[in-house]
Length: 321
Image: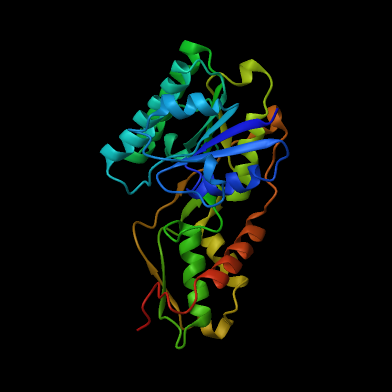
């Protein structure tokens, strides 16, 4: 019998990369639940609707998934009330529908490093969460709801706290924004006068999206019950890198000459103060054997290649003066 997998948010950032990897597995049927149609999947495997008002009992009972990857989430820029509705209440509705259907799939809930807040050292899964912003609060509420269902119903749920994911993505994320501007500078004549950056003193644990997908798949393969049931796993590289160093690597692998770069200034935004996000990934390595495959340098070179193939010279990101 084929294994049935449901990915909520399969058209979203992490969800779409995960879905592509799942589609390559043998004897596996992949279903997606989204607000829009997922062109990667057969029409019969696309479920469209809003997690907050969908008839979850109907389609969950029909599919009876063996594994659910819960990737639906909001942007940190979304209004707080929307973050709470989608991240927290949406997760509660999904898990309640699982219980109401008498199902026991493995559920992998995609959480966030924002639940921990910013610390000056690596955080492991026993670190007390102290979210500093609304997004972290809403994701922590999501995790606590998932853990509550795991305890009350002995449901095999794990929370994957993903750190700073990057790779082939929209330019609202730090790495993508920098890479897109650098590629634009490669094709514009004259060069833009500046590259816009935020806190160059921020240290972040960057993890490539392909490695995130691999880690989520590894978590779904855990066999020991006490390693499921509400456990938290960090997904990161285990290395924290300053934004300034990532920018230096991007520039080093760009087509811009050193002479050309002398004419381009860095326009800094926000407070230039050190803050650190850094994952201890000992637990997931011990329990699954997973480890990142894409180094930061490899990933940044891929990011430049992605934007060279996708940006074109008709999509100005910054205005040259």
